[in-house]
Structure formats: structure tokens, C-alpha cells
Image 1 (cartoon, rainbow, N blue to C red):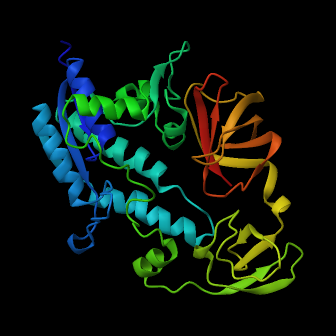
Image 2: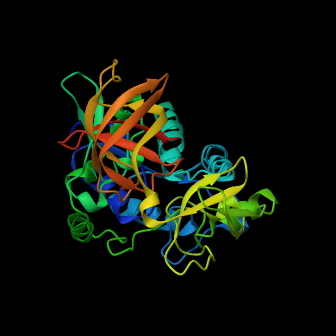
Amino acid sequence: MNGKKVVVGMSGGVDSSVAAYLLKEQGYDVVGVTMQIWQKEEEIVEEEHGGCCGLSAVDDARRVAEVLGIPYYVMNFQEEFKEKVIDYFISEYQRGRTPNPCIACNRYVKWESLLKRSLDIGADFIATGHYAKVIRCDNGRYALHTSATQDKDQTYALYNLTQEQLSRTLMPDGDYTKEEIRAIAKKASLPVADKPDSQEICFIPDHDYAKYIEESTGKKPVRGNFVTKDGKILGQHEGLTHYTVGQRKGLGIAAGHPVFVTEIRPESNEVVIGEGEDVFSGSLTADHLNWMSVKGLDGKTVKAVAKIRYKHAGESCSVEEAGEDIVKVTFDAPVRAVTPGQAVVFYTEEGIVMGGGIIR
């Protein structure tokens, strides 16, 4: 028995519940914690699948903790979540960008805030139910390695974790497939073994981002022009927060064939519309870099496999420095819908996360 104390972030789902079970089986002193991030009592999300924001998450996590015989607490992270996730999400959309709030939540709430409070109560580690593996590279640096299950792998949304955070993190689910995790939960008689996965952004259960932003800010989106790349006006859009690069549906443009959003221009309040081939790009630039398995590029151009969104399979590329805290990525084959505000994450051929940044 190793006796080291680990605080497990428990969302009430099967993945984090099994993480707590596996660590207890490995001899850790396990403490379960659910992070209270919902903003107002009357807005508590009790959606059909019970995401990580609702009171149902607390009820489920508490029941699992009772079965496992571990201490369980609810910690309030409302302020951190509003500042680091919700406010960031709204401001990015208002700038014509498409943010990934889960990446911000992982870095600044689930890790930065939870890790600090966990260390304060004497924990050695924090743990989550993410599908990823923490490894120590030959150069001594910590990094993430893709999980045993490619279709559930969550390393993309975790690329922004720091070396200190990784050194204090356990992710026991990374060695298993989703089916194996559910089988472990059933064998351990965990009450969430058959609970469906939560989907999409937890604080916007109806997925209507534009409506959420309007209600949160009290500002109606300003209508503007749909234009072609050479400036021809095609009609009026409903406000920049309604659109993202690569979008085809819901444009309301009668072109006689499919057209797509290829660019969003906040300075002129225009949404650029183009053809299918216009959505593909051969390169991108990124900033706000975070390096994992390497300290940086040191002036070298490196080969990598880059993912530009969570479900992207990845494309071979070259990565080179293009300024202070900026890289240029040149793809071996054009990629679809490079979207400012989303992350680009670089992997080795073996599946180790080299680092990543935010697409400019």
C-alpha cells in the first residue's frame, strides 16, 4: 500500500468514478471531490444526461463515494469558472473567434484551482477520469501520451497543462477502452456503470451559443453583411456569434449549391462565404504556446502530427518559429476549417504530446 493521498475530481460520471476505484485498488488514500461550478441555483443544469454542472452530478458522485468507502466533498469553484471559462468563452466569440472552453476549464479550473486546494489539504496528487496517460520523457520532462482508445482520447483538450501540474497528476483510465471502463464499473457495483456520457459544453445544455451570449451580456448581436472574398455582398447575417469557420448549415443564403463560412471579420462585422475548396488551408499560425515533451523549438523546424480540433484525425506537418511565442505550421496536405480561437496540438508519431497553441 503506497498511502499517498490523491484527490479525484468526480463529475458523477462513469470515467471519474472508475478512476477513483482504480486508485483505491492501487493503495492510494483517495478523496473524492466534485467541483461546484454552476452559477445560479435557478440555472442548475438538470439536463437529460446529467452533465458535470448539475446537482445530479453531486448525487451520483456521492453515491459512488459511499460504495467505495472514501471521503467526499463538494468544493465551490464558481468564481474561477466564471472568470476563466465563461467570460473567456463570451469574449472570444465576440471577437469573431471560436474558443474551446473545455481547454480553459482543464488548465485553470480543474487543474490550477483544484490542484492548489488539494495540496493545501495535504494531497500528493490530483486525478481525473480523462482518457490520456501521463509519462516522464527521457529528457526528464512530463508529457501526455494518447490513451488506449483513440476514439475517446482526450489529450487534445489537455495540451495546456504545465510541467508542475503534470507531475502531480494521475490518469488511470488512460490504459483502458470505454467498454473496459464500463465493465470495471459493473464489476465494482458502481451505480453509474450505465450512465450515458455527457455531451457538448456543460454550461450551455441547449447548444445555442448565440442566445447564451446575448442573455449573459444583455447585448443583441449586431447584424452585418455576408460577403464573398472579393467583397460582393450576398445578404445579411444575424451577428458574428452565430457563425464559425467551416459552417454550412443555418446560413440562409440561397446559392443553389452548398456554401461555407471561410472567414469572420470582426473589424468590419462581415462573414465571408465561399466554396467547399475555400475552407481548406495549407498552413496556420498559432500563439499562446505551451510545450510538453520539449522545452521549445530552439530555432529548429520539427516534423509533427497536428490536430486542429478535438475530433480531427491529425495531419503531418512542419512546425517552425515565426516570432516571440508564435509558430507557423505547414501541413503536408491541406486541412479543412482552420478556425481562429481553437487549439492546434502537436504530437510525435508515437502519440506523445509535444505541445500546442491557439490558432490565430
